[in-house]
Amino acid sequence: MSLLFTSYFLITAVAMLVTGFVSSRIGGKKTLLAGLALVVVFAALAGTSNSVGELVGFRAGWGLGNALFVSTALAVIVGAAAGGSAAAILLYESALGLGMACGPLLGAVLGDMKWRYPFFGTAALMAIGFVAITAFLKEQPRPARRTSLLDPIRALGHGGLASAAASAFFYNYAFFTVLAFTPFVLNMSPYRSGGVFFAWGVLLAVFSVLVAPRLQERFGSLKVLGGSLVLLAADLLVLGYGGHTTAVAATIASGAFIGLNNTVYTELALGVSDAPRPVASAGYNFVRWFAAAAAPYFAPKIEEWSDIHVPFVVAAVAAVLGAAIVWVRRASLVHEAVELQPAHATEDGVSAFAD
Image (cartoon, rainbow, N blue to C red; front, side, top):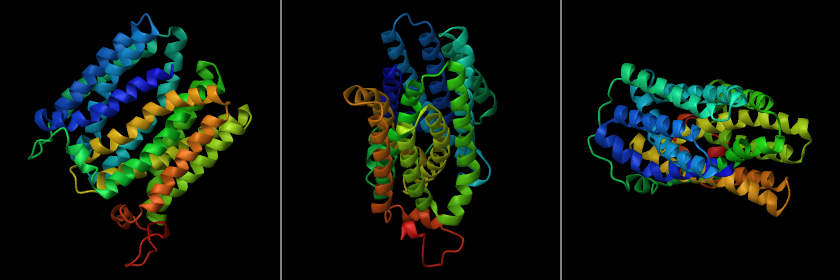
């Protein structure tokens, strides 16, 4: 089961190097449509699988479509939405949060009928997305210069973007330990598990869209990010060592910290360097999705080598390492922090976390 995540995110990570190359040549709209088409095909094929190996392979193809879509979607939303990049990022995060909230419940309903139906359901939903983008999204202007395959790697030469990506790598390990490993630990029915992750997703959406901007305005981006990562680490330890009811509550609560982190990381990745947004996004995602591939594989292995508690300890340590990178490299991340400094800060200063 863990390989369903690992194959998907591993291909997603590697394919991030291709997304800018493709979108700069065929345009953002066609890249989105190509990604959606791949998801529709491979999600439907996953529903026809007759073995775990087939399912893992089809998930890899699905990951390629995901890379083309996810890497391009935010840049297209920023270009198409009114209100600037900050409003576009909140729009993106709100859609992401609501989708992550509703997905587990819909998966539980369909999966309770037959295990193949959630895959067919995904294919149907992505087909609706394909039609909607075809009908309503205008083609975005192509960049003046075509992106090469190595441009996302070169973009990581910027200290701020590299620091954000490195911190997000460790954060993503913690994030996907919760998402991919916790359901096996909770060992609940599909409906109960879907309910838990629905509540988790609601908190994720609320904190990413409503709470994060207010905290950033008051305390500054880096202070919010560092504090949220430390709180996520503490929550993971409670999840790992608490009883079943406590673990359920901690799982739901983690959605709040993940929502805060998602918004701040996205803004940092797009705004901290002078690289074009699609290139910065591709480089940043190339690094962080490797952690999303690693966590679902290593968490069960760590449990086999030790006990049920240790995978959450490792995830907590990863979250703390993410916070440490933000602290140590705060000077390279200060550009974004200055833009979102506390309202009470002086003209010459920035938040305490970003000094």
